[in-house]
Image 1 (spheres, rainbow, N blue to C red):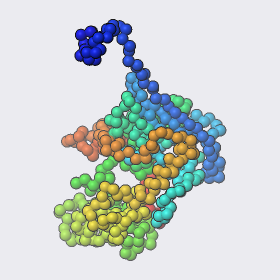
Image 2 (tube, rainbow, N blue to C red; image 1 turned 90 degrees about the vertical axis):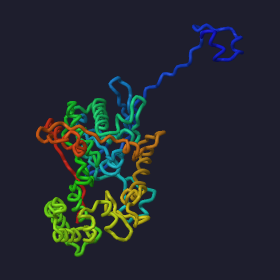
Image 3 (cartoon, rainbow, N blue to C red; image 1 turned 45 degrees about the horizontal axis):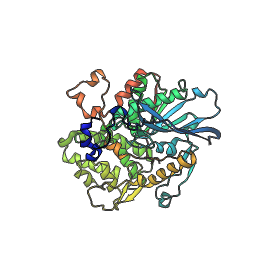
Image 4 (cartoon, rainbow, N blue to C red; image 1 turned 180 degrees about the vertical axis):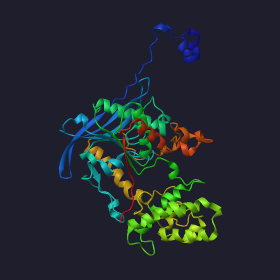
Length: 464
């Protein structure tokens, strides 16, 4: 350091001290960043399915994602269950499973449905069972009998975290999310020698959206799939969103309204044969009801009155309400008005109900989690955290994030679809929101490029 700068930096007293030549000045201690490492913990377990005892290895761990420069961008957490002692283990089917949201971890499809252990869920009306302690029991309905399972937490959920070389924009969106899962699956296949295994994807809710784009990405990388399993399917968001000018959700939701009304005995008279009743409503929804909505203001008053009366018979909501709503009752209104006693039905499972704090308000309020969520959320969060620590012996200094509001709020919904020739034509087609939020063409292209891929769609409906 030049002597003339010493008084400016250190003061006059320091200027009296002997100057130190720059070449001999002590260097600041430099800390080399420690590259994050993958971590795995293995435990053994067993489950009996259809009378057949299956011994398995449960692996809880992380896998590091990297950018093109080899820098770690994210650490993705997973729980894998692989059968022990099977012949040609490297060729046993393997299913990569995940939940939706976006912004939800995959515990719900693991201990909530398909893994070898499951939560004993509280049944509708069993309020004491909604409180701890909760129980995890062997899952006799697990699909581990037919396939190894790898449950993956999306970046920002569970124990999956963004690392210094990564940014939220790289993962919080339709495209970035699919790319992260593509890299994870490719690395998992490579590290565990599963090249020859029949490969399946299993997604729930937004996980089905992910599966469509992920399938196309994997196939384009040469990772062909034997099948894609969609649970609570949402490929085209126009089927869900009640936006002005889009009547499709009203038509598609009507049979579910009827099923819920039947379950809660809100129909007069109450149909005796449930399945026949729902089939009748489906025909009405796709026929007279759809035509009435299409006619719009051209619909005569008498015809409108007849349609409203029929809607009332099918849903239990008053015909006057259907008239006031212009024959279009959104789900949130149906949930709050069906029971008529200040209670609201669940959105994901309408068997559950919860009282409203202020029934006369126009909406439930931001703090209203919903009846089904209120019933199961505590059991899911507590049981899975305890399972990771005590069952899988995977303690962590981080909190397990079941639901990430940050990921959901930052989500980039844009998606450029592969061109589909004449189906892709039209004024403004490249900017259409309905188009960029419809991932069905991506799945169609994946199936076209991978002709052996099979597709299974599973959607819940009340049964009689």
